[in-house]
Length: 504
Image (cartoon, rainbow, N blue to C red; front, side, top):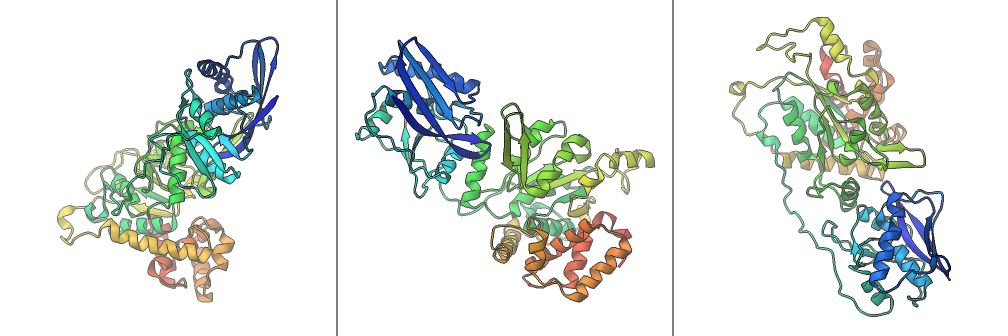
């Protein structure tokens, strides 16, 4: 008899339906798994055999063939232990109940028949909903949030015996995911109210957060670059429920614990990190730092010290919000819509232009240092800041604005963008055609921008970035039309590192 059981295969965070076909016949004892299984899947036969033995269902003098369809997709992970065991029991007529094609099974097995949690269960659950499963048997895990997915009944089980009981119509203990408390007040370790001065930089980061614009900072050591970057998440809007599940899925696939799921993540890899750890990959491709920073901030301190190869690999995900990892037998895509903050010193010693330290670098050394960041990569940044040390004694004693009030303006600006474009997309990620179609740009503003562009010999990309920034600034001000003031502020933000050379 041939039995068919449905399960989920994962390709990155995307899941697809896998049909487990099992045939058991009398003959020379054998257990074969076909359908491009990797080592962890091939090892399933030992775990499944031992688990079935614990149930007194022996595979002695049985020839068992397991086919994982579609056969052209490489299967990986111990997801398939439980569905293979259920398929064998069904093929041996131990299970008499009918198993619908829209009933799925996922989970690893212990040698005594316990069903164990595995990495990637959350993306598998989300995939089960997408492909139309109505029932999903799976192990319970404390790491999973409470899930109530319309149209999908999740049945948590701890052993094969419980699966057999439930399939035969008997009741089993009901386990529900632990509902984590809703956070009424968003708490961040760092707040803008604790940053003294840097008003120009704070305004730039507010614009960056509102429109998801990439930021590049240059300044001497101790000027506050890291502090500003690490405080940026405190003014980002909290993640939606869907975004939270996406974040948890990525961290689960990477085998990492996730912090509070409603807060945007921040990742700050060291410049000695390998390309694979930052971009993602490996023999079985896993998410890298850019995917773990999805919907949050990726902070690259001392960005010039990262390898040129690593930085150039960031150019595609910065534009598309997705990283594609190609291997011989598979192509995996992970989301990577991060807000990039790059920071570097102005020269190798760090004190060029400083009024408190003497710079020991020659002009050639300074140029070589700056050239470590390629032109195409440098061109990916929308906002350019020169950060100077703050002399605290010269700052007035007024209370600095807290992150909470800035976050309210950022959230309101994003809501205007979502309403304008009809989807959850910001000014920096929307297509240029939709950006132009959705808002009127007065003729005099077009003429002004064209005139400044010609005088300063800016590229087409620079013009587009200025328009995107101006659109975000107008959203922060709550006005529909882009004004000349918005354009001037956008030009200042984009060219701030070289603002002395701007000609209007």
